[in-house]
Length: 87
Ligand SMILES: [Zn+2]
Image (spheres, rainbow, N blue to C red):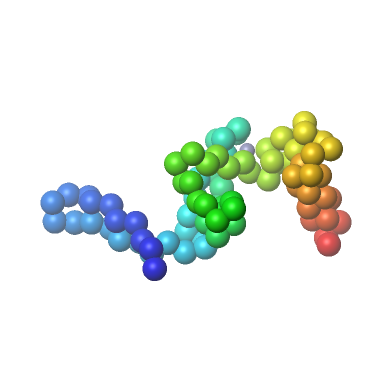
């Protein structure tokens, strides 16, 4: 169990359990707030919250289109097409 703890003043702090539903960041391209499942952010067994940037779905698709042909980009484009078809 992990949680955040924010000190409001000398007597008060807010403690919040980290779950798959209450972690957010902002898209590095458009700045929109996006929900993040930290389990999905682990790459090769590592989680670097300080260096990692996230993109929203729309910006991820646009970024992937610029790198069409690379395996990771093809995967993002295919996932988007499957969602659009309801698969
Ligand atoms: Zn975005």
